[in-house]
Amino acid sequence: MSTKRRDFLKQAAALSAVPFILPSRVWSAETSPNELINVGFIGMGKQSRGLLGGFLGDKRCRVLAVCDVDTTRRMNAQERITGYYANRPELGVEECAAYNDFRDLIARDDIDAVCIATPDHWHTIPMLAALRSGKDVYCEKPLTHNIHESVAVIEAVDDNDRVLQTGSMQRSMEEFRVACELVRNGIIGKISHVECSFGPPGVPCDLPEEDMEPGLDWNMWCGPGPLRPYSSVLSPRGMHDHFPDWRNYKEYGGGMVCDWGAHHLDIAQWGLGMDDSGPDEVVPPDDPNAVEGAELHYGRNIRVIHKGGFGVHFHGENGEVKVNRGRFEFILNGEVIGSFVDRESGGSLESVIVKVQEDFLKDAKVQLYRSSDHIRDFVDCVYSRTKPITNEEVGGRSAICCHLMNQAYYNHSAFKWKPKKMRFARGSGDEAWLTRDYRSPWSV
Image (cartoon, rainbow, N blue to C red; front, side, top):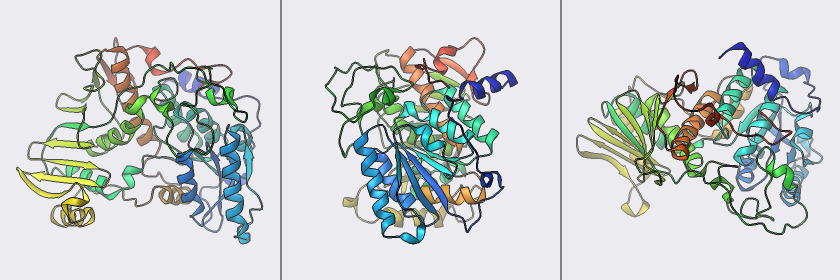
């Protein structure tokens, strides 16, 4: 990427005049094992409540602040954290601070890391601000809302020597690692194609306007996306216990292609050994109205196909590997070697995984990164200053796979891609597909 473009990305992502003062300790090469990591949370919805439990449960961390544009969620999180520390005075947290604007949280020089679990359209701007202010980042998947943002984040982590973990926690689940090790070690032979099962692409938002109760900063919720009338489908009020459907709309998410697709395409990338690369051609389905059937091509011989099925299904010349959360099946030369698809079939997933590892992977040449806890892996890497299992390169490129597939649906067009350079091949695609129209004053 040219110096001119790199400079542009740095300048364009600078936020308004909030001073970012870096504490002296963030310049050190490593975090002292005796020093607690102070964490701030941005976005306090359903997903964040689970993440919060993980960080509170790690004795190396202290949660000092939360941010949410919804007063109810913000205050609920603040009360939960303040109550937690009231019973643990030795940790020195008198009260958790609460903010409406993420910039106020990031401006604090006593916060070392942030956890971002906002809607997708709000991932990148606070992420870049945090990275450039010397903070490490845990951000939910998909890492970005578009390809341009993925490039900016990958560069910002490198430029600022930060640690970033993407919330693609399937890589911290043993069934997915074992499935990918079988594939990477050639146990099922040369791969012809991978089928990934997830729902449809994003659609334009056409929700009707609703009356809004006080306590939500709707302008801030919309942020860099279009300012549209309020809808409870996008941001339900109160302490709801479901995942809101903003993710279905392309202005704020990317449909299930960017939701579950960010998980399963990530595993396809892992199994194919493409964490530092990606597809070189993207092909839409024949039917312009179809919501599955798009393909990512890796060279001339491997296709990743969006279609209903098991979750992630690797097809090799000698067998198959199927994997989903809590489900696994390994077929070799037509024989089922190990299978666990539901509790009713008896046995356990753990016993199947152990036997497959002992019989086929005991002396494997390719041994993938092992993580049993996604948040703990991030905290470990904050201390060691090493890259976690779903670092910026992994998360950014897996997000790019989602965005490329969505563009095939949105434009019903095949195009060539340069994965190493993260741009369209000459004469292919449209540069406008790489980014979005940002609503002022926000930009990336």
